[in-house]
Image (cartoon, rainbow, N blue to C red; front, side):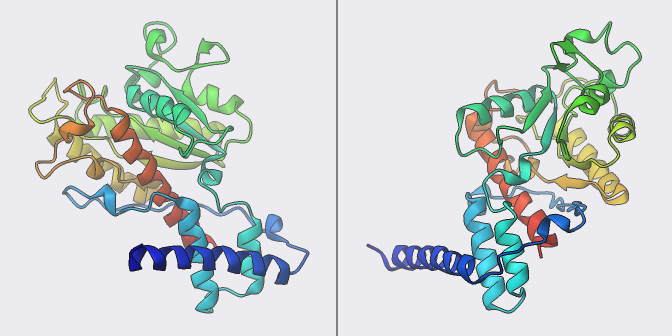
Length: 304
């Protein structure tokens, strides 16, 4: 057994033992539920280059436990804060996403399928998906969304619906992760796409103003693909505009695309399912890890 493995195992055991001990030492009455609901708005910066997903933590539970214990030992949190964090139910692989709805096109459909077949995914039983192949922000805000575009609009309660209408009917939804762009940029400029996205998000917030909004960056595509206005260049431009809009509006921005690209800014071949724009299970495993690490950043920014 290597020394690094022994150290990792020892630390993990220490975290668990310490957490159990604190449960006994902590006050029996906890008022965490009375605290005002936090507003999440972490904007991850775009670096303009490839990022290594292998450097990210694959376990949100371990990361949060480690953070909590280290914070207490360092004196950054007191006993009451420790107990509030520990008993709040947020230390989990998917608690952060339990009240989330994922909105998007075929890429989000693929992520939904990944979540259904992988027990370590970020999706809880109550996580919802509102996505459909070929959907776009442009179609979703059009006046003929339920006629001409009914075949690409997400379905809810058995029928195609405007996205804002479907979300208005959902119970216990507090977060929305939205990812569009692939189908929009085939016929729009990055600027037009941004305007359509902001219109769509505004419509959703008009019916659910309490919703925390997270925009997932548009994933890159394989090298050499250029369909209409869709290219890795237009995707990069659109992502910059999305990031700026998120900063201006207090929305979260998840920099996913740069964990899937190579040095050339294109989707790595091992993540492609069709040598075009769609992704395979290996790519969605990266989505899963990036979202876990994003959740860690959000949670630890506000708790405590």
